[in-house]
Length: 161
Image (cartoon, rainbow, N blue to C red; front, side, top):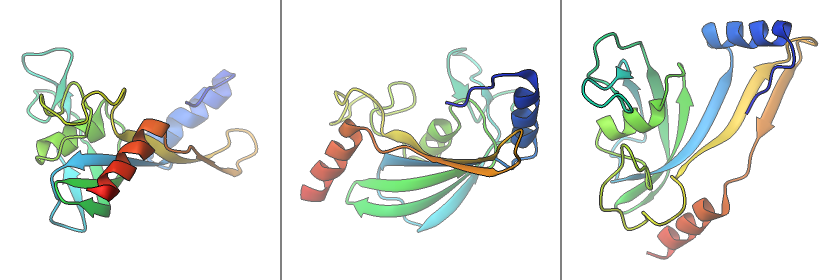
């Protein structure tokens, strides 16, 4: 969560988003074993054609969306990945990973209907790191957040499988 306390800060952060200078790194656990070590999903995203609450890569008036992913660890039918966003569309990682057949564990909208981890209390997608330029000082700011406990518990269970 980034909060802008004034209009100058808001304008600065909006510009950084527009020119893609803000770096966002997420981690996720997805269904399936991703074959490649890394890859890119370059598929435009917009409102789902029939379900207005969902986003889709098959939408009219879709906007460019690019997600880079890298495998961190494989667990048989699950893969722990890192995602870097080039763009910032609503539900981007969730939509992109589902579109290539690797939905995020615990995702109630784009995930599998029957999921052995469906009762985890959240989805296994986490904003791990954020890097941006401070609007006033122009210093590069780095932020990180630890994994939530349910996420680390699933990783531990997968290690034992």
